[in-house]
Length: 385
Ligand SMILES: [Ca+2]
Figure 1 (cartoon, rainbow, N blue to C red):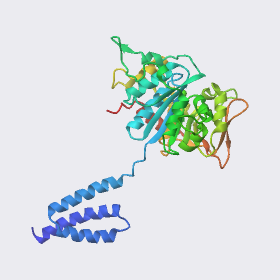
Figure 2 (cartoon, rainbow, N blue to C red; figure 1 turned 90 degrees about the vertical axis):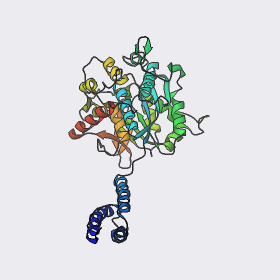
Figure 3 (cartoon, helix red, strand yellow; figure 1 turned 30 degrees about the vertical axis):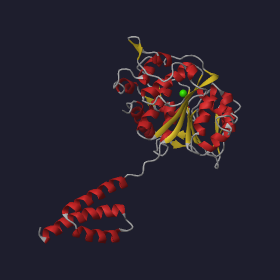
Figure 4 (cartoon, rainbow, N blue to C red; figure 1 turned 180 degrees about the horizontal axis):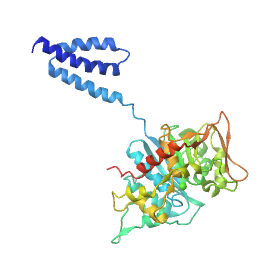
């Protein structure tokens, strides 16, 4: 090869390396360029190509921002009272398949056995039957509801179509013991509690004494292990009528009162109020078109059993899940910092305080469009293979 040709090759390598070098070592550019130039000149072509390949790979990895660790979360739900809980659990599984979260446990605050059995079916459908489950005893809303049992018991030719881990809810432990053992096993300040039903289980957790699971009280466990409470509860828009009582507060006011009274001041709370989920509808068209990758889908079937199709449904619980896992994506705004409490009328009230760390979500028209698309895509995402 002539010296001229060698220089031509060198030039093209050099240009690429310059680009890579500036991206990789912006502070050390002159030093690296000098040494690379000399070394490349002295190498054979094959060696140059190898070196270039290494740099390209390195550059690709370097150009990606380091992946954030998965958000560790516990999902506490009143599954069965509404269908948004089912879609919310599907969103969690989709985000876990994408490496963005780790579902540590699912607990139910609905005092009906089919509530937690349906959660078992959904977890199993998404390939995660081992996720710990816990259920409430002596809680509220013991009615069966319109979809949980029907989905769990769906069969074809006498055989159940959905796998599940437990045969009946009596085999499933109490929610508070599952919450305690799950928190006790996690690193400090690492867990996000997502609560999308009544406050029953969380109130009991906060009031629980030390036991064989952990010498720490429930309050101490929450203070030490939890980093955020993301909760669907209350209503904060200016248009709310005076006689409006939000369901998750109304059904267990004493529990909600306990949570906001005992909750450790240093652990933030972000609430998605009724008006947020109400503004973002999960459309019937998504249910009708996006779930047909499988013959029997527990979320789609639940949706169809819950009400007569076609209907759109607010995304209440899904918004608390989305904020918990992707808080930094600008899907929502936040109110001023403050403090929540249950007032004398039994309603959740937010008082602005500059040093508070309790906030509620807000929405702009652009965010509504964006979050609707995101949630429909996530809730209908097929299980990971
Ligand atoms: Ca719910």
